[in-house]
Amino acid sequence: MSAYVHMATAQFENANALRSYPFQEGSTLVDDTGKRLPDNVVADLHMFVPADMAEGVGVQHPEVRLTSVHLSQSMVSVCFVSRFRGVASALSVTVAAPNLRPYVPYRLEKLAGSHDIGGIVTFGEIDLPGFPETYRFVKCGSAAVVHPCCVVAAKPAGLRCFVDRRSDERVSGDVRIDFSGYVVTEKDGKSFRLSLSDGAASELTARCESLSDGVGPCGATPIRTINGIRPDDDGNIVLWFH
Image (cartoon, rainbow, N blue to C red; front, side, top):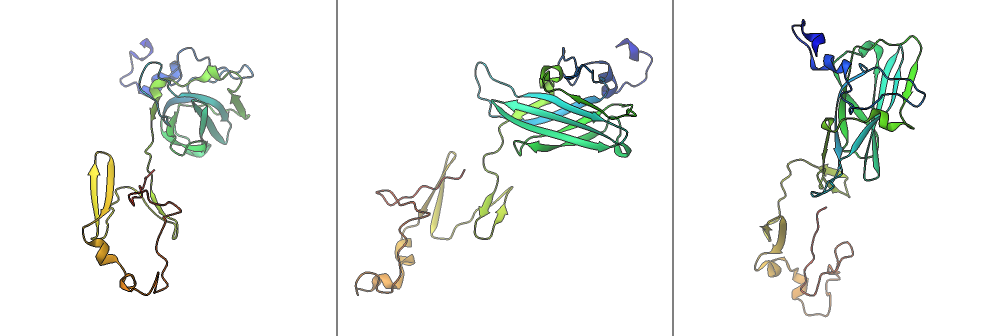
């Protein structure tokens, strides 16, 4: 980078105005109509894409592409789309011209797809055109492919929150689950087992059960299922958290 020999400090984003990054080498940045997007429009990009990538030979990495850019005297807008195994998600951001600052990261907002996708984009020193210009990379999507080093792919957490369907209350984060004194909890690896303590059956049995005046002398209906699920032959019901 001989252009910066006489500069005391050369910011990382400044250097990106003279190279393809954050796009792959070979990306022409020529849109569907033949117009070329200037290198200094997108100076930096970092994205998180949810993807369950299995280990082994032929691991597929999510592909992220720039699909559109809009420049005008009033604003700057960009849109990125990720694809992984046929599933597409889109992120975009629109920045008003008075709020546009070069080399300042802006948060990308989800347009479609997974709720877990996210990212930030940094613009360079853009000369806003006097007339609105739009660049679309739909037919020639390979012209604006984001470099894989700018994309982090990971499997999102399976359990997000506990929801009380009666009150619609939600709890998430570090949650502690307590049980009554009659419930015994055991952990075996990643599995949990709940059981009643010894003597709990006699303690919890209603007084009506001790009467001998036929079946259900108090008119109470015994619990036979949980959400329509019956116990197995040993009287056990397995609860799966997913």
